[in-house]
Length: 322
Image (tube, rainbow, N blue to C red; front, side, top):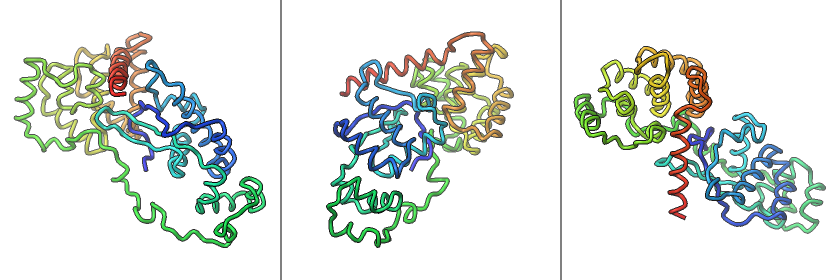
């Protein structure tokens, strides 16, 4: 279970078409169990899955907070509830750093009656008489005893207890700077700087996918000093992912206050974010983007332009694969 979505950009598919009648079943049978927020999120995602075009294939998960008037915790809670009853499935594309939601068709009255877990849950909420009104008076042999049944099956959480380690999404394959010797890093970066052979020319894609040691050199055109390497290592140890640190490097380099990356300035920003327990890439991106616009007195920051170009490339790639 993902408490938070690590990759904000998402695409939606539906395994089978969800009709207006299916939405009636959704509201009738699932609303008492899931609540209105989950129902609203499902219907909104379902609508997006039908309205997708080549131009609007990708969406921003964080934008749902204001489009649906939900805070991020409420949004994630609604998503998790939908996942728990198999109304949506969530998949992560770790290479392209995007999320795929697959919309599943709600059960009808027949399917709901056969699902003892959901049926018993609904009966416990609305009562047997109301349940009969919803699904019809015909009842199978199992549901005739539903009010006396105790669901003794193990839940997923009981079998696989959650740990903080399991819930942590690691953004970089290289977590510890000691995995590659400093001299080897320096030699490789020298070659990349000399021939401009960094893996991702688009800075926004580089922010998402590049090890911070290399990203620092890509935008500053300098070999990382030991103080830079130490900052990267310490930030990782405190749970600050490489994409988040790359954002700070980019912000520091493009801020008018400094002509290059001032490591003390970067350290101050990182420590402030860690102190405020802000580790979400999307939250840091919004925060730094607003600061950059204010400092540089621009309506659109450079990172937004790079981001738009990157999203267009993802869309083209997705169209070619479909």
